[in-house]
Image (tube, rainbow over all chains, first blue to last red; front, side, top):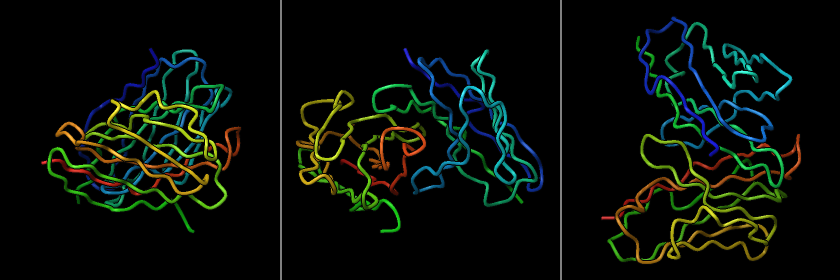
Length: 113
Length: 116
């Protein structure tokens, strides 16, 4: 069964600190992996996308890594800001057909001043 | 439009009522998806349209759920005889096409449905 698991479920950090979110997946066939940010009451917005041949991708203070061998990904947030408070969802695309998305449950990040 | 829009943003229904949720995708986007997101969970796939054709409805939880996109643009998700377990946020997403690099899905803000 195609699954995406994320950890931790929730996280509280102080403003200015770094943090790393984890994602493990069992999805086949694999097309790509995205990290989405979902603010409360909003739809998810894509932060990064990586194919199996890419092992790191940055978007400002966000850096995602991918290990296609172990089927693990991480999202590192540097110098956190209050506006980073959101849910971060790991999403894997199934290759073929219409490219179905498999979502993780998300990590709820709270950045406190 | 600038993005995917959904209406209403919030809907409260009494158990047994029928509801209709609307999605306006980005103009020109061929693919349209509906997802159900329970509180504290990631979105789960409901159904997929390519233009007006509903190519996958395997995620619809019961025959009370029905979706349509008659002219290949606006889509409506209808839930008949709502139950409390239908309470969730319903997200709509659209993409320009199916094949990379045009298959990125852009999400609307969702409709939060509460069934009393």
